[in-house]
Length: 96
Length: 323
Image 1 (cartoon, rainbow over the protein chains, first blue to last red):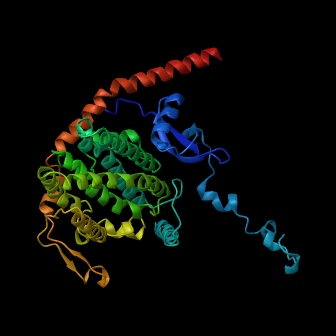
Image 2 (cartoon, rainbow over the protein chains, first blue to last red):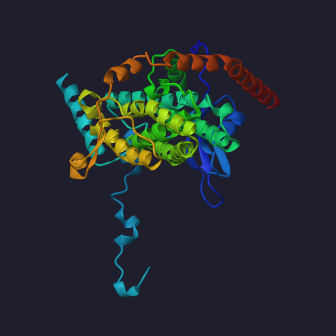
């Protein structure tokens, strides 16, 4: 009875709490089209005024890096000169 | 073969080290199959419990005694629906489809919390559910906010934030009834009598009979054992009952200063495990009604899903034609 039906589209939901802050991922939702996705996202993820703007994106449209290549993709341990503490400045120079 | 085996052991050890460092596991990270399966089972059951949990309370929405009570109950039941959805989407990140989960709930294959297989004959049952059942759920859920699986932990944080009003609204109902007429107070006491033991059973079998606990604790899915959480629950609820002049229906209940590592806690009577397993196996007072209600809702909603799907296709076709 259930299996005859198609799985509906999965959307990722992003909410912006207020102006000045970024949209932030908060979960996902099933909906057949984008209007219903926005409608359901609002009902499911914003029942207590959590936001003032919602984005929905089809989950399959999100391109992500490979978690097994975390080391290669993100390692910067060998580039410590990119951090401020790499540089010696006399204490009496004050905050810099 | 030996090399494959060694690699498997090495990756298991690496996984455990990651857990031991309190690092979170995210959907695309490698994880042992047993960890994935345990989570799918637990999150799935949790989601189904939220969804079936709407039924006993939904029973009273149209008969709530005042508009204020009706609004609260409606908001609470709507929250349960939302919580079910947060959890289904957490389970989906582990590779289980929504349709599969729905299928398992409707066919009766999937388990959900047995507490929802008990009936709600009076308004006081709604008070008792909020106070005791949500109280027990919160006890269970707060440690899950620190669960090692990221999407589950994040869902639990949202749920716990929203759920704190549920227990308060239930306790307020019980408080109001216990200060009411003699008949109202009796109604509250009878609801407590009905819900006490099933609530105590909500934490699951005692540690000695809980085969899944060891791995779940090792993997930081669970942070406390069933009996530890049950003890916390009893210790929290007993004084709350006293405060509103209701009696916990357990003649063996007494203060035991040796409990909780000498800090003291309540000793409670023997749990009726035969009843527990009977209801888990499907022979509770409302098991059939609950599943039938879900099947009916699914079947009656079928045309809505079909129409929404057809509308989406029609609009997409029109959009493509315009391009």
